[in-house]
Length: 132
Image 1 (cartoon, rainbow, N blue to C red):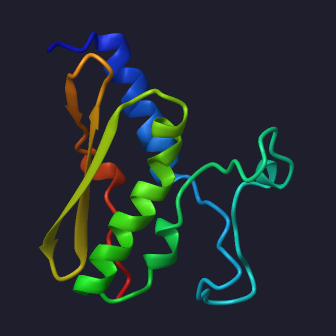
Image 2 (tube, rainbow, N blue to C red):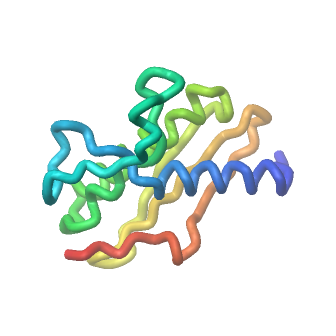
């Protein structure tokens, strides 16, 4: 199955915004200080509990362990769940690859209604280098 360049660009943009916008931390998330960050618009959602972004930012100062890798995959899936909820895709797979001691690449793969699969590998300018 082939995905049109316009549709592919739309999905890449949606995934980039969803993964790399900072979602507000949950009340039980460990944070470095009192700041929970997040987009101010999430305080007044049109749909209850509708939020933008991911909590990947919570991992910015942690050691890259297998648990951190699992947390990153969970946060990515959570951030992209709206694509399933809104019927934009029929499936989402999140894989990750540990590149070295301080770099993790997330690779979301979307299955479009037509059955086509779109693997999104972010450019190196969007990859997170961990501080620890």
